[in-house]
Amino acid sequence: MTTLDDYLTDVIQRGDQGSHFLGNRCAPTLRNCPYVKIIKGPIQNVGVLDLPETYDVVVHSATGDPKITDVHEHARSVVTRLCLQAQQLGVTPIAFANVIDSRTGDLKMLEAAVTGLVKEANSRGLAIMNGENAILGDRVVPEANIMGTMISIVPKENTQIQRDTPLLRHDIVLARFSHNGQYVYINADGVGTKTDLHEKAGNPQFSVDDFAAMNLDDTSKLRATAKALSGVLEFTGAIPMSEMMSRARRLGQQLGISILIQQEEATGRIHGDSYFTHSLSGAVVSTIDKTLAQTPLQAQASDYLIAITGRTNPRSNGITDKRRAMVQLFGPEYQHTPMGRLFLEYLAQPSTILYSTFKLLIDQGLASNVYHMSGGAYNGKLAKPLAANNLFVRLENLFPPDWREITLAGANFTSAEQAFAKWPWGNDGFVTTAQPKAAIAKIEAMCLQGRIVGQVQQAVDGKTGVEIEPRPRKVVYFSGKE
Image 1 (cartoon, helix red, strand yellow):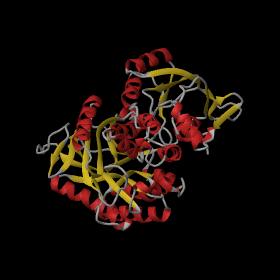
Image 2: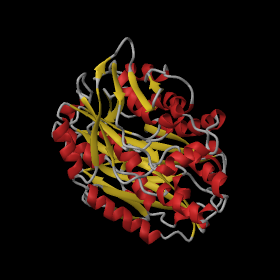
Image 3: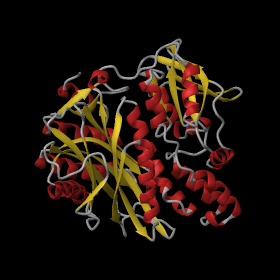
Image 4: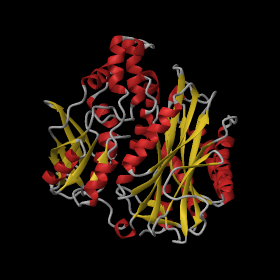
């Protein structure tokens, strides 16, 4: 285990753009919480909570005050509202994660947001454990909308809040669970602009699947067991709320976790051109076995790389480009045209949730590492973790992308390098394994498809990361070190 001082030094040296900038500014707040520990992650070290066994964990979420448009004050109000929730519930807030949804990702705006979050966290003795910087363009009306998910604690002898089930108290959606002496971890993400596609298709409940995939698949990489997925549904108009809540309940039961969705009317804060508009962001709180935390997942030379695919879908990243191409091809009202509807049928498919499959393979010793194709795709999510261990793989026989994916990429004049750096391109995720037949059998038992697409090697002539040949005489290469 590394020290907190070493971790802070590492974070601060990583850079000052976007998410790194936010991580740089928030990292010193970890000193506010005596329970913070630093463990080794697959690419970089991560902060977790080592809580006394006399406490249970309570999870709840809130947005900033929707009436406040000033970014700094809106950010402060996120923390204030989370602490007010904790007070109403009779629990003690200790740490939180946040998502900043903005129009542009402008650094001046981020500076105002993070200054507000840090100021309020410091004044209340809270640690900011994790955050997400999402650029949503014209879906956001003010400069930024900010939400947070809080980890609070409650003495085990306090029985006023039931364990292991979503609850509603004082209009606050929450869940309580025992950490059983394991580390507690939180990571945050959101659906992004794919909500616009679900609105146009008339199926906003599929945003719940995307929300789960974006958060839970990240959790898998730390051998974590998800306990509560908590977020805020910001909405305007006549959204079919009962369908969304039912989707969350059913999905939570299938995954064996509590899915918590706090509702927030957001007129004047989010924009769309359908009968209703929505945004869904939050965080998953999970536990990590202390005996496994010191040995993170790591691919080995000679491991096989297996690609995994489910029902064809675009996942939930790089959607802005696809929305732009749809307007170019079929007009701003494309959802009302025959061809537009055909493309929308693909674009609005919910993401494949890989968490359960990843966890099964990891728990049974069939995966040395797992990779999901969300933000950064083949570059950030595959090449980078391989390169961190001086490994290289050449990809062959990948699952092909949907024909509509290819059409939209062409409409955007997207190069092969750009496509593989932004989109899953037909492959939802990957695992490395020394037992490919057994791993593929388990993947197929989970109603997914898997096949060998490469074999991991030590760096070849200094070449790390991944190499892809999408068509003859055209090679895409990501070193994973850029």
